[in-house]
Amino acid sequence: MSTLLLENVIIVDGTGAPPYRGSVWIDTGKIRSVCPAGTPEPDPAVADRTMDGNGMMLCPGFIDAHSHSDLALLAAPEAFGKLSQGITTEVNGNCGLSPFPVTARNRAHLEELYAGYGVPLSWHSYAEYAAVLQQAAPAINVLSLCGHNTLRAAVLGYGRAPLTAAAGDAMQSLLYRALVEGAAGFSSGLIYIPGKFAPPEELEGLLRVLRPFRRPYTTHLRSEGVQLLEALTEAITVSQRAGIPHLHLSHLKTAGAANWHKLDAALELIAEGKASGLHITADRYPYIESMTNLSVILPPPYDDIDDVTLMRRLADPAEPERLEAALAAIAPTRWDTVRLVTAAPGKYHALQGFTFREIAASTGLTPSRICRELLVEDTPGTMAAFRGMNPVNLRRILAWPDVCCGTDETARPRDYRLGRSHPRGFGSFPEFYRLLQPSLSPEQIIYKMTGLPAAIFGLPDRGIIAPGYAADLVLLDPAALSGPADFAAPHTPARGIGAVFVNGETAYSDGRVIARAGQVLSPQI
Ligand SMILES: [Zn+2]
Ligand SMILES: [Zn+2]
Image (cartoon, rainbow, N blue to C red; front, side, top):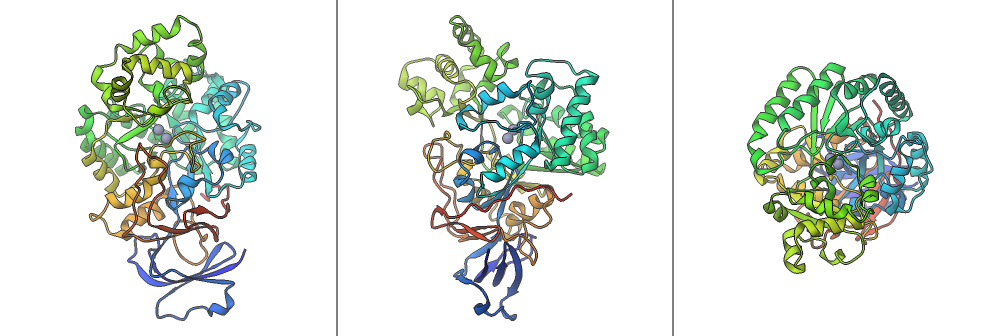
């Protein structure tokens, strides 16, 4: 640890206050003082190092409210895709999927799910996982939510198991332990298996355990399109009944053209929930294509089968034929909007980044046949992007005062060894900044990327440039800031990021990761 005097910068402090010129003195991982231009500066001679910011903008490090790097940070702790866009802290364990708690019921499944990372699952609890993560020396700070899908599977497995009193108690004990050990809150992913099998009473019981910790409940709603309003009502109602203070909506969206008109009604429901005293916030990535497992497209009866089980079942020679027949139920035009992002190495590897319609045209196969073959090759690892969101609604959602930026992505290395990213894994924060201009001021946008998520996730010493705060900082050129990553070249680094500091260390500069100074954090609420 050392001292650094960062001079000649335009400070955007993360509170929403107007920018001002000045300098910042970093000492042993913390901000020691902030000196507006014209006020007495510390003598440069007392600092180990001085750095001329050349009039660039200095912001708090960006906080990624929605991340999925649970295993990626162990396999590629440099977190290149995140650090290179200015992210210094991320919140993992979202959408109901966390790498803990691990029991005899879910261990084999999780090992298969995470097989591509080549990391042994040597832990059971959050505390054990956090120790392994800190040992890996991630380049960015990390918080982890306890995920409902993992929690349910730890007790009831991945099938359609009914909630019993004993199972409810067991899940609540596991959640309580994770929270006591420092998990950042509780997440659900109610479109996924086995979360989709959970009745509202199950969630309410778990939220009662969460309540005294005052940490957020984050939810990937049971529906983001056809049943969006019903799903939103469910989330608000279970939160109110359990008496938790804070509901956080993951990647708030109106999915599917037939549901785009529902945004006003959704915002109205949120306003009513807030009026009842429930604090409601949300995150969103600044793109109109989502990304998740290709298998979510599967019609019945395959929509109740988890990926690991399905892959085993597809080894039966008769099963792929049945799967392809079931896929015929999907409307042909749907394939125009589904894009292959990551496939297992093989004959379709070169077709990553293209829509199923485009792949069908170039291969002469039907989209159903291509889908079948991809899922037979690697069910859990085949990822697809789904274009179903509206750009006007996107800007409205981003501008909503309680929405912060979340990539909904995994921290990827620069290369493709851990699979291909959605462009959001490299460009979300610059794109968030770009899309909100000029309707919001730079300081208002930076607040949504820093001070706001720090408040949401209980980080009272991060997200703001002020004395005593952690020295997580980004030096950037706002005029050059952009996220050129796209589906053709998703690992293209952001532009305009000069340097990133994590806990006072220069972590990223000149396009390279220099230090891995991240810490595993617990919320201070
Ligand atoms: Zn999700
Ligand atoms: Zn997610």
